[in-house]
Length: 183
Image (cartoon, rainbow, N blue to C red; front, side, top):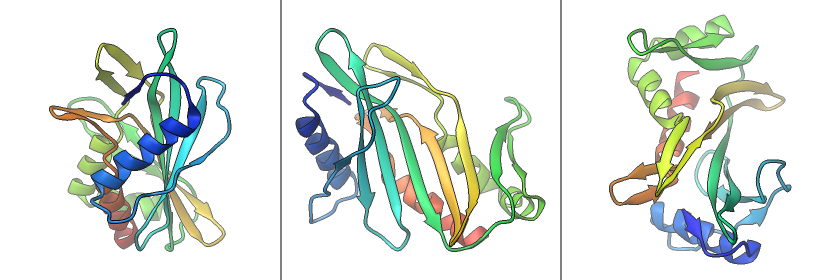
């Protein structure tokens, strides 16, 4: 998602509009600003409606002399089910696939669902080409304990599909609901 200029209010409005359209909502989402980032301009945050509290944080980075674009996206979902210790998705190579490691009980439940592991890997985009720009981020896909359950944290990039880049927010919400049921 590219922007002409670096006006934070205009960019936040466009991010909110894009997520509203992707989720087919009747009411427009209200974005707000996170902290300035060391490797970007600022973060635009949007709280998504639904049964699970989900926040999308889109890092806006410089693109060229005057433009900007969405870089890393962080999804945060608050889950009611508690875990004892963190669980993270570990990529084990092309032929071996990926597995969850960490809290033994939670990892065993998550690893038992092959479809959940596949969807988790698909959501965890570490590299993307958006237009002519190649982006890469450090992978982060983990569930961590919290006072009121657990928190699913995923750092990813926009899904650069055939019909333009998308946040894949609906896919994340579905994935978070599956985590809630599985844990």
